[in-house]
View 1: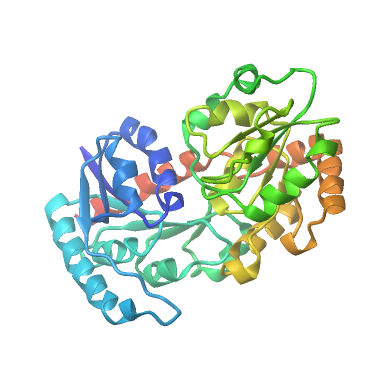
View 2: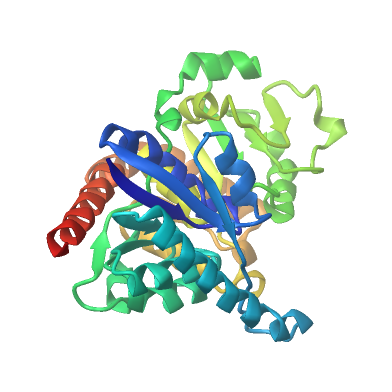
Length: 360
């Protein structure tokens, strides 16, 4: 049986694409192992899938001053020894990494042990962890055509992001019923990320009376962000977080308002959902969401509204524009070469595993 090690952690975005690959990897006959940090979010997410999980020492390399900067390099070095020991123990044919700092020693150890490693970079420009791992990689998968220029020649493959199969299994009528909505009025879905977005939450609620004249609104507002005064407003529902019913709510949505995290917007692309993207401002991030949103706007997939330009009027105009041009956005997304990321990545994994077998 072929063996594969999956790695990635630190945030859910560094884990869920790995989870999306698992059913197809099993069909292809791979025995799957996961290497993550001892106590990161990845451990909790992976354990429910009954995949053997191995924790290694992990540290974060920061661009800012922190006392942990003096101790974390030693954790990284220990992580490299841990990962190398696991490579010799598990003897995988290939490694697939979704990034995060825990993945760096795993990819480096794979290279030292002669095991091909494939990296997936979600954002437009590689983050620090992937920058460190790329020299040890066999191939680098990416989501944006513009990313290719930042990667070594011959390594970059435009794949898109693996999307969980269950997201494609939504039922519009079930979603409308769950929200007690009418089938005769269009639906806007607002997604502010797992923690929600205060700026988006406030902006949407401020124009809610005008929105509800035409639209119904599903608002995923993040933990602690429910507004009790809006509990029984007809045509509006709010949830801190939705897991099981998310695919139904996605299917019910005519348009989506979202941040511009790479995994989130790749899901919108795969589901062909016209969207207004409101990226995190550069002051709150390394600017990757702005670049992501600009790329999707350029490709005709989404409408870009910068947070600093967001007013009641500009948000209403964006909603009206996207709703009026829905079919054009859907047509552009339908032509994207990144609609079959899982198949493309599985083919790369098989190719890498065969290249290792050929060297034996």
